[in-house]
Length: 182
Image (tube, helix red, strand yellow):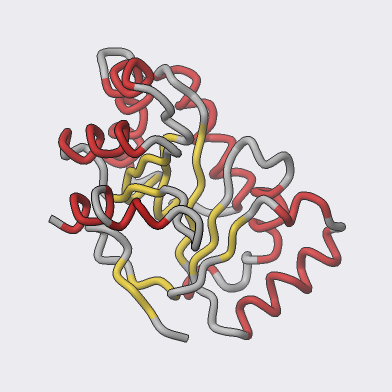
C-alpha cells in the first residue's frame, strides 16, 4: 500500500483510508471482519465521526489490537467549548484509546461557523486543551465549502483539511489543495 504524509502532522497514512460512515449499517461481527480485511490490505488510516451513530464504537472494538499500527481520526459537529469537551471524552471511550491522532471540526459550512468554532468559547479551545493534555495529537477541519476551507487554511490553526475530492469535484485541486500544500 502506498503511503502519504497526512497534512502537516508528519503522520504516515495509507493512501487509501477507511471511511467510517458505511460501517454503521453492519453488525459488530461484520464490522470486525471488514476492519480486519482493511488492515490485511494495508489500510492504516481510519476515519469516523461522532455523528456516524455507532461507527466509533465498532472501530474502537475492531482496532483494539491494532492501535499501534493505525492512525485514527474522528470529528465532531460541536461548535462550542463545552460540547466539544464532551464529544472528545465520548470519542476516547468509544474508540478505546488514550489518544486520538486527529480530531476534526466536522462540516464547518460557513464563515460564521468558522468564526464561532475558532473564537472565544468555541470548540477549538477544547481541542487545544485536549491536545495539551495528550488526549488528541492534531487538529483538523472538514468542509464542503472551498471558500471556508481557504479561510481555515489562512488561520494557520489546523493541521489538516478534509474535503470532497473525486472525478466530479476536482476543482479542489486548483485552490484548496494548492493552498494547503503551501
